[in-house]
Image (spheres, rainbow, N blue to C red):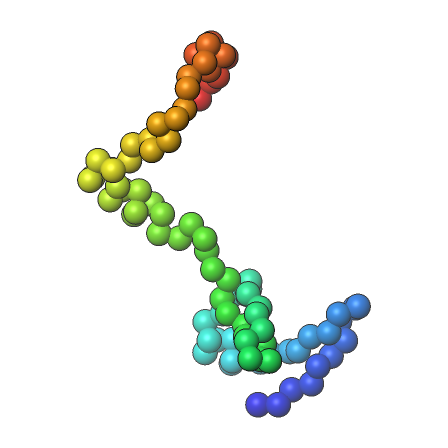
Length: 83
């Protein structure tokens, strides 16, 4: 499908037909990147997607302990810090 690049304020853009958006399952937020001189439009990734299940698996395997053993607890940490 051919389309025209249009002026949108100080930028430029294209109109994407509704049917193409529906077929691609792209929502309202997208990521743009250039690959081999082509503009690629992808659904926006959700960086923390799936974390809840992964944390639950860590708890089940008792793998949810602090790994930074260099931490030294000071008097300030004991007296002033609130969680």
